[in-house]
Length: 284
Image (cartoon, rainbow, N blue to C red; front, side, top):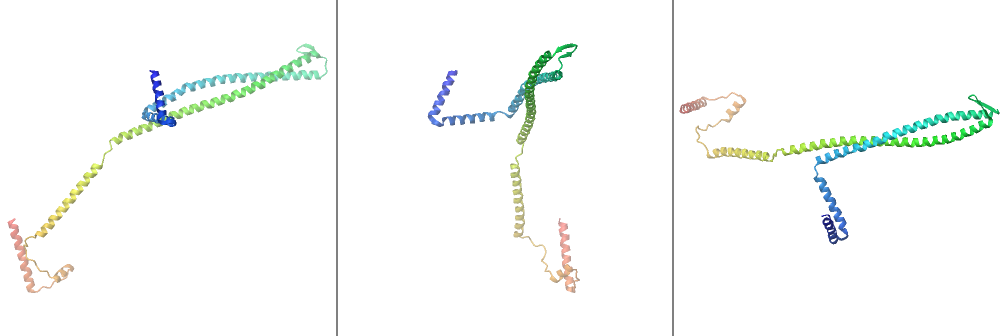
């Protein structure tokens, strides 16, 4: 099976080389990049968030391993600090003894007494020379140990800073993932809400239709009134000629002076109108 796949891949590469020539690699790499992007974009966001959480959890073993290394180094540094401290105390005591022997020899005495024992000048000189050589060796050792101690202390501080950075980065990643998850939920809510959004286009069309119907009815009603006026109606009362003087006087509240004939005519017309109204009411 593997041989078949290998042969198929080689055959595809040769075919691409024949078709595209020297640009075959560019076509193949571009196609592979697009396929990779399409595959990544097709992965659900929820799955990617779960994968991010898993990767954050995978940081814990590495952080604990660094913590263990730092703890071990702290113990070693403390031991080295104790060793350097003991050596400094020993060198201080040795330096005091060396200076004491030197001062005794400088006094010019032939014999010297220490702790109840008497020593010759040569013996004291030999002891002083041995003490001084050991002091110089121990002092050189102290210098090297202090140099090593400083280097290890600096390395320990750098390791602590790196560990603090990892812890801070992990906490920030956890916050970022929580924030992204909240944003994703808001997107899901918005997408769900959009499914229930009302389409008001039909409502607008309905309102427009009702308005058109109302307009048509208004026009029809006006046309009925116009048709009635054009058709004409039977004039039930005789048209009375109005006197412009009387209209002006009535409008402005002026007294109207009428002669006897005009008064009689007005009374006759009023009586006729009253009679017609009574007849109409009896018919109804």
